[in-house]
Length: 152
Image 1 (cartoon, rainbow, N blue to C red):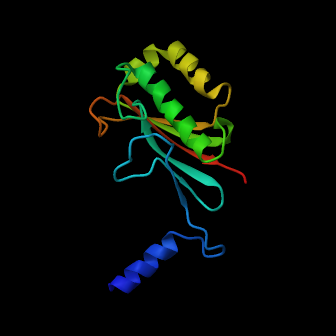
Image 2: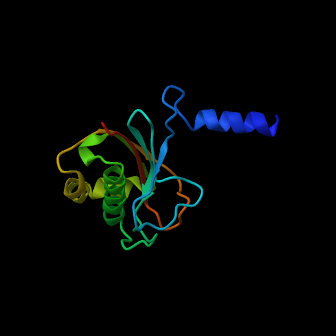
């Protein structure tokens, strides 16, 4: 495939043919640079795709070593991405959770619920949870991704 064909395909993938508007990378101010991924992609139609967030801070530091603490930080990160895109947590329609330890999650249901409500209040989007073997970051115990719709 020629370079011109590849460039044309990339340009088409990065813009809405009807409006010429490109998806916007969402990166909260003051956060460490995302390497090889985007924290969020706001599409021309207002759909916000939120990349998997783990329990580290804006400086990529794990302050919490426990499941609940990391889960709460991941949700705080998601909320910040949504706010940066111009929305609120109530604009989130879906969350997918990836957890390494089902037992830790189940044993702390009350604490999980309390931490969740501190960040999202009583907003409960559609959710799925998958138990997985591992995450890319060794210290990470949970990763959460989501989708929101930001109306203009």
